[in-house]
Length: 66
Image (tube, rainbow, N blue to C red):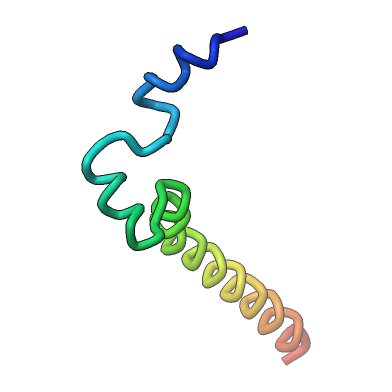
């Protein structure tokens, strides 16, 4: 188990000790929000792909006998 004193000095813990984290923290943005916003375009591509797949299946089924 780690000691609490050692974990507070860890640069990877996300506690915001660097200049950029402190600056963006003043306006309410944290690293978790930045990661989430970075993944939104990939999630949207997945939504569009799923929509296109459903549309393709629907078109294939409805034009089966034509």
